[in-house]
Length: 227
Ligand code: G5P
Ligand code: MG
Image (cartoon, rainbow, N blue to C red):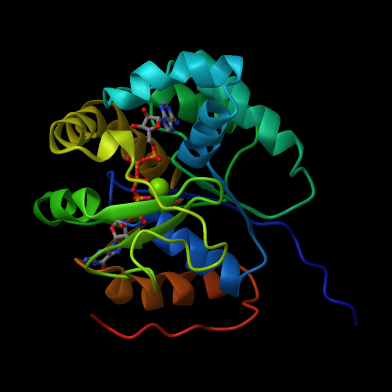
């Protein structure tokens, strides 16, 4: 008999620097899900100098949230293109009104929360290097590029995100506590929140893989050395 595979709609949440991008790239390697990162999308809009990008830049650079109406429109528009796909949404929703708008139009099946202690986040972000066009992430301690300052895949330059300066990171963490933590309760009440606690992505990853494998067939399981 042919297996009928239903689409799986997933959200990944967690404070800034908790490893959403890191875990997402592992998920899309091992499962048939399309990754949509609100931050990567905004940064590519800024790079292309689009109207939304120019509007968003001042909020991002100061560690504040882009207004809900802009974000909701942007993300729902992208999700329209993924109607028949399984997806993994990273960085959205970040406020209760965003969560409500998403729930009305494109409800998620599961929400993964990365519960990483605040103390260890600060140093991660200040040593992060990013390949802006693809969103590929490196860290001078955790996963350095083969050549310093250069993307492994394209050979292009890596940049430090404008909002990874210590003062801005502090502001982002405050914004998270004020606006995004309440979203966890929203999903807890819907009964679809799954929490993963740990200090390291390599500690969290096997648990995420195991959990997602109960929801959809994995393509493979990639093991990462613990460090
Ligand atoms: P973003 O882009 O969504 P944040 O702040 O939510 O930004 P961020 O910073 O991208 O999240 P992350 O994806 O959770 O963090 O973490 P990551 O990049 O994978 O890991 C962070 C660093 O730690 C990397 O260098 C990685 O290599 C390293 N690392 C990972 N695991 C480990 C480990 O185990 N050990 C060690 N030592 N290192 C590790 O949003 C940016 C802005 O866009 C706007 C807002 O202004 C926001 O501030 N925005 C929105 N505004 C309104 N509504 C929305 N929905 C919005 N979405 C975005
Ligand atoms: Mg990210």
